[in-house]
Amino acid sequence: VEMVNSLPDYGVSKSHDTIMDMDDRKHALFASSISKDDGGETKILGENILSLAKENSFAKIAASLFLGKKITSKDTEELVDFILRVSVDHGPYVSGAVNTMVTARAGRDLVSSLASGLLTIGPRFGGALNEAAKNWFSGVVDGKSAHDFVEEFAVKKEYIQGIGHKKYRIDMPDPRVDEIKKYADKLEQSKFLNFALEIEKITTEKKGNLILNVDGVIAAVLLDYLSEKEGYTDEQLWELIQQEFFNALFVLSRSVGFIAHFLDQKRLDEGLFRLSEDDVADASLS
Ligand code: ACO
Ligand code: LMR
Image (cartoon, rainbow, N blue to C red):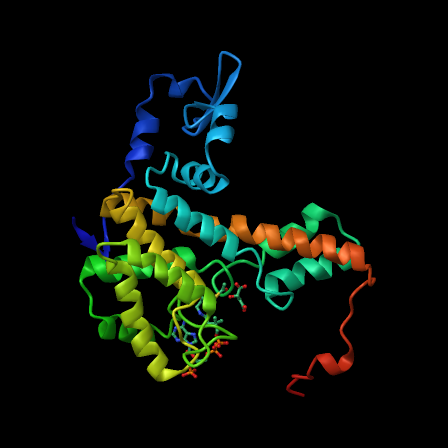
């Protein structure tokens, strides 16, 4: 594997080549590999929709659809199920929930309020899983030392995605992170989690809140599970990173919490939200 910019250069992903080789591609407006109608029967990942729904958990269906193929390990299914359950909400304080609540109190509908929360998910809140996966993947594949890895980010003055939290710190750990780490007990090796924990050792020496956060630990354990339990090669893991797969589970799960906050605000009906002058400091230079 040629390493380009410290990340593997796997070139164009196979799935792209497969699509472009299809005979009927020139006539079809779209291509889809996850679902279709087959003689009037809806099939998802090649299985009748009712059979899929009756015989599989939501976690297995979601993970399989996101991956574009069925997961095979019960351990992976249980990990994904826990990630979906533990990520639904983290209180009415976090930026995404607040935006949903503000939008709901402005009289907007469910989809608009949900969208407001979802649009908050990004590099600092809830959307760091995929970049964290890229960090742990590149660190392991490049064989980089944790010290050199952290130093590179410090020199670039860039934040390490997957590291840091506004509430939790080394002496007040995130219980979710500790619980997700336990899933590594079912692994023969956890090279990506081990690398992430090496990074955390260094960053928490700088500041107590620079812990391996829930985005970072989900990314690390998912990488290890996909590698060991689902047989994903490094090339396939890199494709998932390029597709932004690792953000998908958080977005799916936190949508439940945002919808709940919308409905709760509708029930509470406290009217339009407005900050008071005391809530906003005057930062003008004049
Ligand atoms: N990597 C390296 N250094 C960091 C990081 C990081 N991820 N986060 C903060 N720092 C450093 C800053 O450089 C700064 O250093 P300085 O004092 O020498 O200038 C110091 O820590 C304080 O920086 P702040 O921005 O004030 O830290 P804050 O506690 O507000 O940041 C946050 C918390 C926003 C989570 C931040 O750590 C971050 O952006 N992390 C990366 C994104 C990420 O993983 N987000 C997911 C959070 S969990 C979730 O959303 C579900
Ligand atoms: C979350 O899951 O929303 C949190 O980790 C973010 C936060 O600031 O609590």
